[in-house]
Image: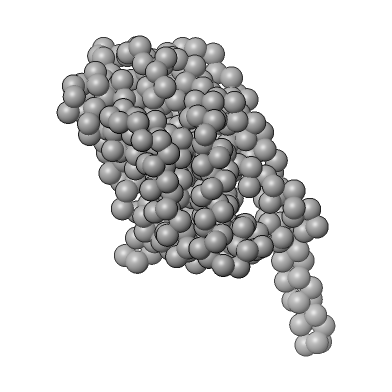
Length: 348
């Protein structure tokens, strides 16, 4: 029972880790999709959608039982696998480039050594990705809980009371695109997790959804309490409102959030490249070089221009996974009924 709980919590931290990247943890993603003072009910809607998508991808992974995203796409898309591969590849490369660019931007807060910081963090991701999905899960299990605590405290300290929730109009398409963009990256990782039970899937998805909704709620509240939306990384200004100690506590947490999302993106691209280049180190090196090229366009440019496009692609990918799960479930039920009918005929 305890092992089952630990396994579910590890997967939930994997889900959260793929979502809380530099875009989320810095607040830039929230501002880009929902504006400077977003309606806080968006957080609740996002939580529900994250739960549904996480459950979907984990059940797909349990159904196909494959070890990398290329094999998963073959099962789901069949002859259209190249299209699915391009979806995942474009998303993962965009996120990887954004995270590498964010690494250099954060380092530039003290000293501009571009692109050395992103290369160092990228090499660390390469080493963990080569070890496989277990290495990714362990890294998230260690870092994500700390990220949740510090980001939450930073936002709570910045919120001014009495607090008046924002009543801005909710644009459903923005919420859907936001979740689809984040879950496309998660899908590339979660569909390769296949050793957990249905109960563990529901528990891990629920915990992840609650955490994401809670953090979004706090970030939106903090944005409504101070003028930080104009900054490249609003969360740093939010933290600075509580003093330099909170600022220096939040800075490494944003670095950790960059790392966890970069790790998931790297793993997804690495699995794809490995289908063509069998050498582990060469594959990892090619992924890092490509990520550095995308990151050269800058953090704000990649997040602001590419993330909404990725959201649209994510919708298509999520829909395809849902159709696959329903179709395979129907086929399995038909086979079971046919088997039962055959056994009855034999008996009579």
